[in-house]
Image 1 (cartoon, rainbow, N blue to C red):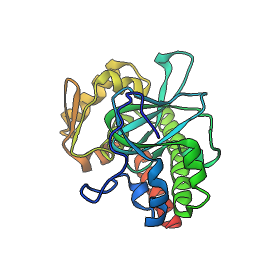
Image 2: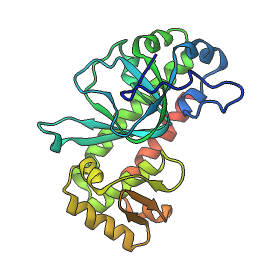
Image 3: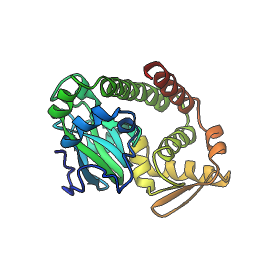
Amino acid sequence: MGVSKSGNVLDTFPSPARPMFRNRLLQRLPAEELRRLRPHLARVRLAQGDVLQRAANRAGQAFFVEQGYVSMVAEAASAEERVEVGLIGRESVVGSPVLLAADPASSLQAVVQVPGTAYGIGAEALHASLEYAPVLRRAMRQALETLVAQLAQVAACNSRHTLPERLARWLLMAHDRVDGDELPLTQDLLAAMLAVRRPGVTIALGALGAAGLVRHSRGRIVICDRPGLETATCGCYARLRQFVATLEQSVS
């Protein structure tokens, strides 16, 4: 069974008395595929800062996120130079390279940014499940293709667009993966994720706040005007949304 760094294993799977899976990838699976997958799933608590996979290490587990979200971070020479290149929430799974191998090595580090819950599963068990679960196999392929698209689009965004545009894009991606409009984020964390200095984030966040798009205080950001934030960002966010919509249509 999958267990997060915090080691907090909750129930193994939903019962009829509780809501069903919130992870949208698991929601797509037919009853027979879910029945065979369920014995391998363990619901775990994700604490902020949990490292679900480390760069250059074998990924022994995969996590179907139910609540919260996880940053995919590219390693560099020092911790200060790390750059976030993707976000994964309840729309997907941390560990999609399992599609390629039972114990794939990860080139990225997966770090929980907003706490929540997930269903963990051993990488080998998940890889073996793909043999008898065609819908799961297609969904995992989509998750992997979406992650690759994020890596490419975020790299282009970071190199070509202004910090306020990049910040707006990041806030929209985070907003897509939480309930409500409040994001528990510090400016230091945003600076680390965007690979810029904190004063730059302070200025960019102040500009978005002055426009009435967000409200921020110590440790939290509230999205006040979602359509306005979409207007303030670059085209990268819309391209990613369109890619995912097209991919979902092609594999449905």
